[in-house]
Length: 408
Image (cartoon, rainbow, N blue to C red; front, side, top):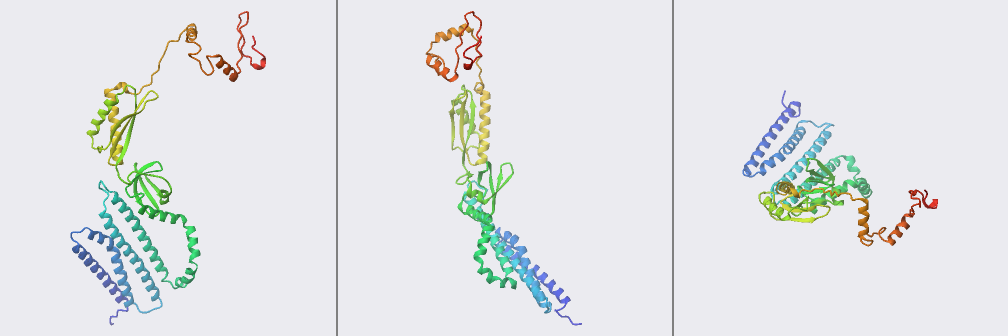
């Protein structure tokens, strides 16, 4: 029995040859790339990104050639060829996407955000993240369109679909209004520089950092390790605070309510000592002022600055703790306290004498102290004068105007 390629043994042998060839070509390619860029880090990134889609593409292409060379013409061959064509399109889209991701990875490695002045780096990384996702989405959509047009029925419907493209686009736009709004909002956020990755923001009353910006939503990592996920349209339609848009340096305040016996000058001197011995303070601002003095307390406000928001929070806590400890140690009388003044109750006759000595004009008010005030009081309250009986018995003052006068 003579050997022929168009048989099952020939097919198996062709598949083994294809697998061996794919392994050899892949190994040689990886070795050449690493040797070509021996002192460069991008070679490892390229190999990690391209290795599996490249091997898959070689394998699919080799198997397609093996099937075409070893399988005889039959009625089911067009279906097999169609499957291989769709597989090649899918793997090609995968390979192209990984190639674009490799290029964006190089850009992200160039812009580091773990340094002090990283505003431009954060902006570039934000735009690269959005662009890489947009490219992947476009590649996938194009691949799906190409796969659909490999079917004869879809190509036959192409003319009618293009003829009704206007109506279909309107219907699709209305149906996907929120999705498209988030898509364009994500692009706007990426290129308008409103927020960037690693920006410190305050949204919905929560403080956190921008961790991820996609075409649909933004992930904010909160200070207590929670994650706040907001649609992209939130940042284009609602006000929010961005603490690091132009610089990460911030100014913060520390307020204390103390007794009037506190010495602001001595506290100011101690504040200078406290700030000089800590690395949290950046040396820009050091202010201590008495901003209010009402309701029995004196409000002292301290203004300090730091390089970023987390450092400022720690600095404010440190300054507050040191000042409280200083007040407790050196000026205990300055601790806020509530005072209650207790007077001895004078005798009724003494009180009446004091009123008579004060005079009508000294303690006059709106409704007491003068005849005009008494008249106003009578008009508001309809008071009835109480006249003591001639026999000395107490008068009954429970009657009102309807009773015609007081009763005994």
